[in-house]
Length: 274
Image 1 (cartoon, rainbow, N blue to C red):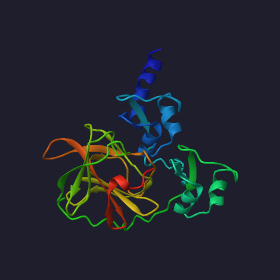
Image 2 (image 1 turned 60 degrees about the vertical axis):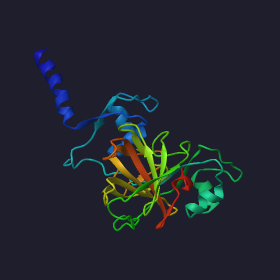
Image 3 (image 1 turned 45 degrees about the horizontal axis):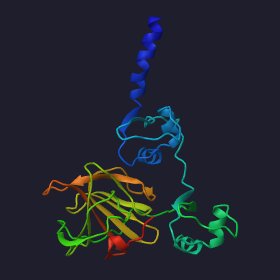
Image 4 (image 1 turned 90 degrees about the vertical axis):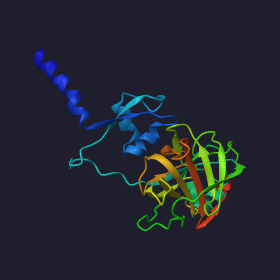
């Protein structure tokens, strides 16, 4: 009995060497957490005695399994076969097909839809996988030292933003965009699917994530407190990018968002979402 107990007591310690613990934040999903750590939802559920229908709560601690880097028996990562698009109100088959450079017939075939199928808001569609060269990204030419000047103009907080229900304040001058108030440590989510072109500190803007959509728009999420994605990742609408940062002068929790159509800045409120 003593030998069995000693073996069982030692087992968790051995397992802990091959896993990390994650604390669930507001807005987290099993899918988002699995993407962050490069594991499958199935493996995440198995490690925590859960199933895909379980509801997460803020503060919940999850075990994140991972394999040793020198484990030669580990199976290679599966190549992504397709991306997922969530249908928005007003979408048409023609618009979605055109953006993804395929025909309507190919789009319907990829999703096993008939010729007379209709679209519903919230419907999930398979779209061709995005292959983007991130070795030499063409990033927006932002001036150094973040010379932002805040205007008195406020934006519409009811729109979909990277954080929930923010106070939206426009900036003016050489850098146009919006400042978004946030809760301390709040999860920052992508408002448009695309490829992560750059992460890290950038020219005085703090922690930055640049996401380029298939249509060529670049979304610059700046002033983050932490970053959970890496260059080359493909993120979909609602995926977690990281957490909100803190303004070094005001001491308030916030982020900034800028959107560019090629190199031309546009009003973030008018930028495509979804």
